[in-house]
Length: 318
Length: 287
Image (cartoon, rainbow over the protein chains, first blue to last red):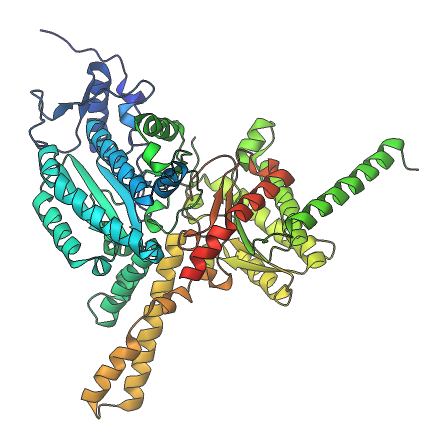
């Protein structure tokens, strides 16, 4: 009988140290039984190049013969460790218009080039086991851009989603949108609903697209909703806590609503009203690359930076 | 009798002060940030680096804060917010929490002395956060400091202790709900049960909680929009600080540990802000 000897001792494998708790949850309160199971899976993964999924179900036909262990679809670049990969990555896709201007092209060319970057990022996230990718496609402030540019962007969203819908299903991508959809053209609203419904059972990667979104409005509507429920006697004031507010945010559609890593391209050092509550403990990475130039190398750089950071959540390492 | 080195040191200080004033004169020809916030990270690492006791690291951090406050005052910044103690920091070892609370008491006393910057510069102290979580003696010192400095108006120093942004938002929601419930009770008692049908729709409108109701109950409603958020020690995360207020502000995370943060970091932060200012103004006018 073969005996398996793990080169990596289970105790030394970091357990979820890089996973962002939402502000209402406590990272330290992981249950011991789930820790030890995850630790065993990660030790085995490190030894064999296989990766462990945390849930016990088939993932779009990608379950390996070894039970709930699946093969990573593409090996991670050197220097990246599977057990330190972020679970949820958020991206502010900035710089498309500037990219076009530098080339003497219209802004529309920049946005189209940006779509190619997004497709590559979605593919990489899927291959490398990142569960959720949230992208800031259009902010509530962007409505004040020139009308022609706004109309072009709305049209671009429709074309891309229409075109990619079949791919999403084939690739196991679930699509959701967050933001004030009432301001979007009716045809786009209808298409987004259709995309959400038709992909809701996909589980390889959850792509959340923030369109007409404002982090402040997200918090405000959550607070208002809770306040009205208190007013109407549906909940008691004493029952209102941070977890309840989080459940009312637009990101409650996600399994892990809070990003571990936020990437902003184009060198700007701002959050621009994106996911404010949800970014409480996220690591922020600012890339100098303009969005259409953000590719695999730049993403790996962001992931390397993320993996090197020590996350303390207000306490101290002993 | 003055030694040659102390005379030279005196000249050097005066010259450095003169250079700094010239630099600030140039900076103030451009837009000056009205509100700067600091996450003062790195005191403990500083102490470890220099083989000092933990408390000495925090004391060095306090000295750094006084310098930064001086720069803000000289440049004309009106509001400075500092993340002195997060609610999450209560998870630290009890002796470290006690060291921090004792240091806070010591420094509040120092700040209220005649010769301190607070008195010299006319700084108003504002303690922001869930003060009920503080021990009685610290809370009393905090309230006393706010009372004594209430009439100062040259610069407002908002000290977040103990604070998290999500707790601030939660508190604002709770207060809004409580106020509306109290108002609703008062109206019912005054009006009785007559004309109930007409009053129901009117009451609904009055009881409708608006975003402005929640915003005005946030601890940070005392300060204007945030212009720059600076976190020292090279960490780039917000750690649950001013999430709601940082939607448009400039972020800056120098690698220097907090006690090492100096004039050049401050100047660089202001220059970055000024470079992006035209962009910010355009966005503000559009909204």
